[in-house]
Image 1 (cartoon, one colour):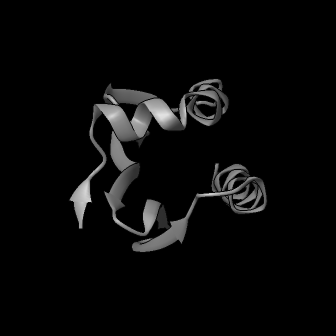
Image 2: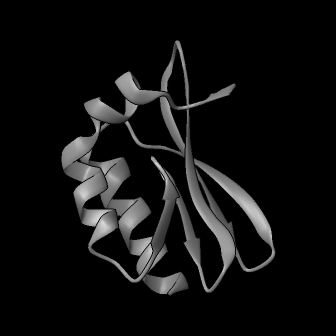
Length: 81
């Protein structure tokens, strides 16, 4: 599964605006760091867009293709921060 490209990130631009409002640093488009550590990035494939989030010390993958999935992701991010 490849990292999400410009076109894929454009399809989730409104949701990315919510992530950008948090206490994260976006080092490159769609790649976010928290306290100098990689924290969140996105992947794409034929089945949709996925977010990889570092939860404690492990990466977990979440689908982010509908509002319910985004809401769950934002809750997880807020809990982690």
